[in-house]
Length: 130
Figure 1 (cartoon, rainbow, N blue to C red):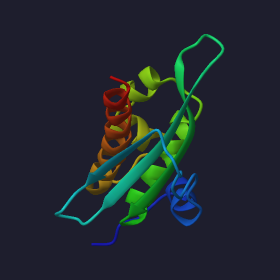
Figure 2 (cartoon, rainbow, N blue to C red; figure 1 turned 30 degrees about the horizontal axis):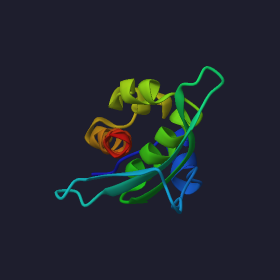
Figure 3 (cartoon, rainbow, N blue to C red; figure 1 turned 135 degrees about the vertical axis):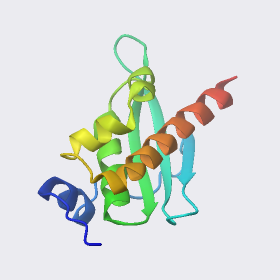
């Protein structure tokens, strides 16, 4: 089966945004799918905005996987950078797919992995604050 990707997906695959690790990250989230082999880590540095709400000040990711996985993780980091934690927690896989110009249905699970990695990082951050 040949999967065709649109220009936006290919741009995020070939030139992923916010790739790498954050040393001394405030939180790290991980998600993976043993069936397809995709694996993602999201690193967060948290700050506060002018209203005193916690925001994602800096975000980086590492992704091992297919073009859709890399593009999904890249787009996820772009959508939440500078946003509040509450905003990031409300983001869904459909939001990632839509922002990428719609992932092929067979690759929709990649956007789910990216969201899971992000949400896991935020949950880990909140646990560390208790």
